Length: 418
Ligand code: NAD
Image (cartoon, rainbow, N blue to C red; front, side, top):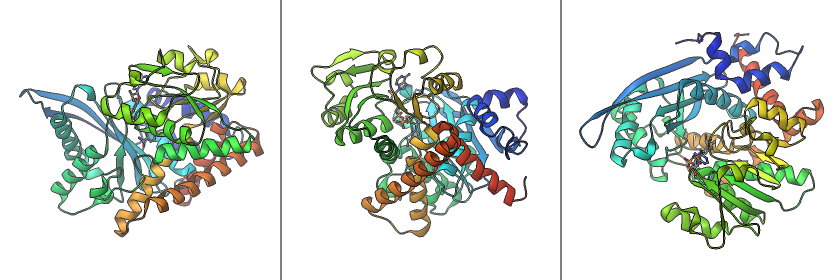
């Protein structure tokens, strides 16, 4: 399907984005030009049959959406989750297009997803699903076309199976078709924690700019992103007082020893294994009186239902789309600083870009080189977003949208599409 989703879908697909877009440059140079961003360039859907371990066959709805490729091949993760829908994947693919432009890497934006309850899949079922996904969409994927990566419930092992399946179909060794791979298959050093390191760099930059010292932090989600983020902030001397996963959270007003939790949690995935902590719900965690709240789980966590109860001064959006547009307006009116997802969590795709560069050149970098380059990209993006925010007196989210959208539209213009 090409650029034709119908108006209802367009409105639904990017509530966040269209609202932001409409407000960003009223009367300015984007008017009439931003329509090119209101729908994805290409939407691929499939129903994938997978043989289950008990011999039955299950059908999984799957999506790959290439939203905008004006600045380069489309780039974005694949998630396995029972809530996945075309609308959700489109919204995420839009965010990826803008995010890659915010950090100024030469990629467009895409996203993939399979509607599947990953917790009910065995490893062998997960492998068959991963391979079937590539069988279905391989023609549309490639190092210069569309480059997937991990997301919720897909990890480096899944990327390894997908890369292998692609090679089985196409014959060539092409590690650059996918990022977030294991090191042994051409993955990049530092990729596993890059999103979190990027987020911690941006937060530190903001705190420094505001002359703030050490802060108290609550982190929702103790998966790949949340756990490393908590660890980095803990190591930098900030007080992480609460963390949670899908089962609930833990709280300690004196601060949780995240280094200890990181090791213990890895073994059996139980946050309550820590001594002397209070058990709390995810709702409690979001409403804690902390300096910094970090949603690092799933989207739509801060909504009109709970926004009035949010007490944090700073929200570092490590998840994609954790704040609804309506709640975002309330936060802005309350002068809560929101460091938006398209800046805060862009470290992951930045190191994915480094991984792709290493794959194309067959030359591999040290962990220190990767982290230093990531720091440079994140600091530059932060500085540019802050400058626009201050110049125009707009929130960091609007400043990030202005930065990213301008770059995408400039590329469309130079292609002759505007
Ligand atoms: P993950 O699957 O490793 O972790 C997700 C965490 O969220 C888990 O702890 C899970 O228990 C928790 N969770 C799930 N449902 C929840 C709920 N209803 N309430 C509270 N907690 C819940 O995924 P991840 O890779 O850490 O990704 C987390 C978020 O960060 C997602 O929004 C993802 O799109 C975004 N993100 C990830 C990356 C990356 O590099 N992995 C990059 C950019 C953005």
